[in-house]
Image (cartoon, rainbow, N blue to C red; front, top):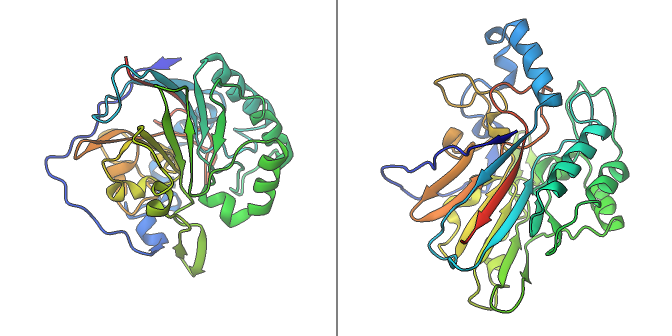
Length: 313
């Protein structure tokens, strides 16, 4: 199904927030409940629906942002795949194949993959090896190519396997890198950031390998910039030089109950960057709800989605 995007989040006031060098797990789950504390809120029927939606639902969510520093005449379409978390019961190899087929059907100029490639929850019923999901992603086709970044789960649970699988399938992996794409007169920079909570410092503390200044220093022309970041928490630090930031990680909350913020928002900013098109100080970010699941294989109120983004007229 094709869904309309939620309205951009436009705060009344914005105060820059300094990110901690080591983010605690409590900070990542600052909504206070986490998924381990919500079992009493979900009746068996809704849990069954959540498991079904996670395994069968698939939305194509369309966005047409208008960043101030993206030329109106420069049309670009982007397909965004985030948080695949390959592994049954909801993301077996056939389901991964469905995601790739649906992504190719959009016919976008560019395809980007925002990390977290395999499932790590305790309820896995079908193990999908790294070479298997990577071979499916290798079928992604776009005129300007397909590019990938790493997520925190890739760093924490299987970094070497993910890197090897992407390399074997010749899917470019961007880690604090920038590449100039497009034809003369319609060029843009694609920047891929290292993960922001990649390394464990100790119990419940992490350190990133992201280098935003170093990444943007590789941008050598005045062409517009698109930034890929697994976690959206980098957004307060992103300068206006970047036309659009694309992020995942939050799963849109994964379980979103009516009239309240997402129950599970793994961000130091709580629900502020949990999902959708966010505009702050004339800077634009789109956060995907992603495809797979974490902790439990259930989605409620957040259907798995592929993003289709159009920039320019």
